[in-house]
Length: 485
Image (cartoon, rainbow, N blue to C red):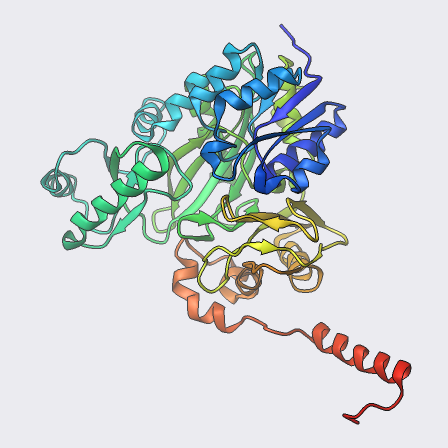
């Protein structure tokens, strides 16, 4: 049965909220924004048709307050709630509450979110669907249990300890040797408890120089599954992605077919509906890939898939939520470009410590092949309470070389953010590095080349010098000879 969405509440802020609003404008769907006190003048507030104050700055008082969000949706006569990414996007309890309130949940069924949110159960489901998984110990009570498992399975250090629930790089600790295990377990437990409210852990074999590849999948309620090919998200800092590209330069067409259809096989097994992503880790030595997790939501990096396929994936989410079938088939999806996305985070590019304050100057890249998803404007505040992502800069070209060239233009000559620090200088250093250009990189790329990348930062550009000269000429023209002459 189809249910028309005429008005939607977007349970998010910043970049994700703005992204969903753009599609809503195309589909003539009215939008309701929610905002915390520090976000009262945020970009997503201005862009929405209506905006409602939800609480104070801390997320628990605002963007994580489930009952209050649902109450706002009902009071403003919304038909549906879209969670964006982050906050409550992968919270099965919130999805259930939305549906219980008679609202449409724009995402996969709550029971699927719950199943895939538990990494231990997700691994077991993947094994049942004949999807390769990284050798792992899913249940243990002591360090001895881990050491015995390593001996039995002939697994050597390093290991990766992971939180069983959640993601985003939180609750993940790499262990190099036996002596590090006690401290690493304590650290992972503490992070997991703080971030996800559950300290259950699992232990995995660590894949050296692994490549992070994910497949974009979509399914409707009529059993129609298809993929939009893959993205590579290997360049990370602190286990969090900062550069993504599509298609992946690490695999050939045979592996591309295999990895994409493996993702669909898994999604069929769990009866998935809506948009979702299956993440894999590729071992470059053995050319084998392993299941990591399913992201039961819209991904930050979905935009590069849209650029290479020409499909509005957010629009597809709305159609599926309304009960419509997917209007095309697998053979209709023909990627014909290469796209790269750079995440512009408000952080010090040298230390990754958060940077917040007022954006005193903002110039946004323009020109052929560039797509921007921004959550700020000149004069906007970047508050200290939330994720540091303020903008996505995407570049596309007929091939990888051209996409890198366009992104270089966007970051070096088109983007200017003042008032807060961003990681743009680091991103520019990465895409200019010979190893990145050749496609030779792993999840440890930033750690391995850190000093080299830092030394390539350009504190001042030729544009800055040109502006200084222009200022001098203007002063002389207007005021006559100066003292410094």
